[in-house]
Length: 320
Length: 167
Image (cartoon, rainbow over all chains, first blue to last red):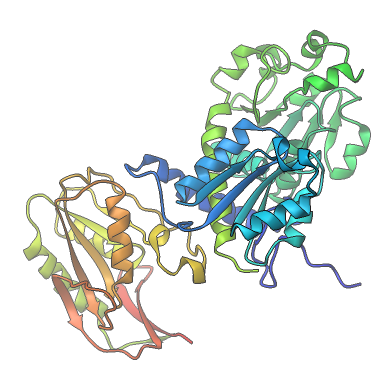
């Protein structure tokens, strides 16, 4: 059977769209992380800008709200000297009944070079990548429950920064795994980069047993889940899940799966605690842990800009 | 790849003498990644400047990014001193079109406003496409356009030259 080419790669195996971490070879993930290291130093310059995307137009298409992700993409594109156009599509075209592909065709006519897409429907960035002009690159900034590849990559950058390598680590991902595109991207990236033990930790309603098919160890007990972990990735508990009878209450959840100092003491002494933000203090994470010496939540934000600069500049340098 | 009848160690000795004459008490050496960076490190030690040495990369300011993509990412600029008001002597192994120099001068100015920037190279192979001139070159020679000359640092730290045929 002929394998269909990964739509993210050109015929030379170079990255032309970033849609999902699933299916990307380790060499490309490593190239992105190494490149991000170079861009991190741009923050230390008097002039925090390099001209790699000068004259290019990056359109941020956010069909679903996200101030933080959109802002970090905007900063990354601006530090690469691109012109950035933010479209709050949730409030405009879509509500007037325009189809996604018509919106894309219109924006392409405005000479876009790159689309950064956030959409509540899984797969929307794939549809855009399939239908946009050959010179246009698409970055998935989160689609439905499917993928959030730049978050996954910035999490990998953070882990490599603090732990140096991946091949002896135990990583626990805690919370609402089943609805989380971050968890899915993290699991694919950790697997590709050779992490030997990945744990999915949370209640049965949010961490079903069939996650084992992704090669993770499923834990419904928090103490077992964080024991001897090198890295603990806490996920935001989405409030909308509370009302859906998947969870009793925020207080109950915190008692069972909130990360407290006592639980953190079960992990490795040099464990790091990560969170994609925004954090719900007292729901999934105790303030003392979030602000404590193991927390690396703010470095994640800084690394996120460098990782997004790396992704955009690698894409812009590769032809379809 | 073939070796060329160019004695890199001899040319290095001439560069060391030339750079030694150019040094003022406040000159700092900045090597252009990668060959120039090796040269600047060795010059800085041999000439006992007791100042830190810098490394600079053209990657983020190259003018052929559109055709060649991002390329080597291990090339990071490190300038462990104040750039504002500094007297900088750029060091490179081979000078040809001058485009790398244009890019690294832009890179340098992202860090501050130096008092002066000069350039010393081991080999000036001609073929300039921009108004760039070194204050010192150990050798001037002419090579066919399809040959790429680059410095190699052997495992014992000694220098040789390599010539690559480009298509």
